[in-house]
Length: 274
Image (tube, rainbow, N blue to C red):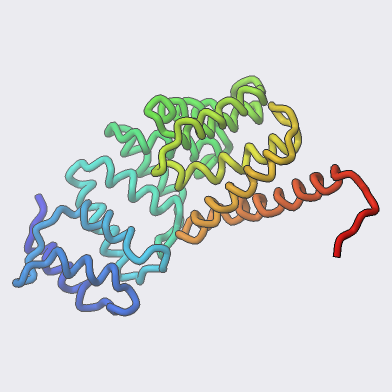
């Protein structure tokens, strides 16, 4: 059971070490959960999940990373499956000062999945799809976990199933089916989901329209998709999701290719206007 006096002392110590100008959101949040006597009546998971979202995407100091990790571990000790998944995600991404360790990420994802956390199942799908902490990829297990996520309405899982049809991973290659799945993602996408899903999906559709993969070639549609992909992917990278830098670059280069093709299709004439 959590000792609230211990948590209060730890929050007070962290608060005293902070530079309010460097980390204003962290400073303000910790101030808000302490009463006039410095007592904190909050759950470790709530404190940890709020802290990791403060002052994003700025790197957090080591003492704060250690404190957040300790808070997650307190919650995990009480059986909090969401804390297991979230700590795994910090290790998977390795951003903002957290160590990147796929081994630890898989450990916490598996722990969370065993305790019924469905998001952890999707995350495990990624680990098996890319062979994170594995000797090799395991597309069968990846498909299994993505299917569970898609069944729960997770659009990342759904578009990764699209990737598997596009590439013929575990399932028979079917480019038209992949296109249908990507379009289904757009049709069912909420504003909340668009933050993490729209960029990658538009990037894939841009390539398909540009090259006539699974759909009739349409260079104008390709350009529009690449432009939308760039906008969403830029926000993802700017908010600290640096793993999508290559995707952002691909969206910019895709526009160049689409524009080049469109210009080549224009009729030639000798008219000019000053």
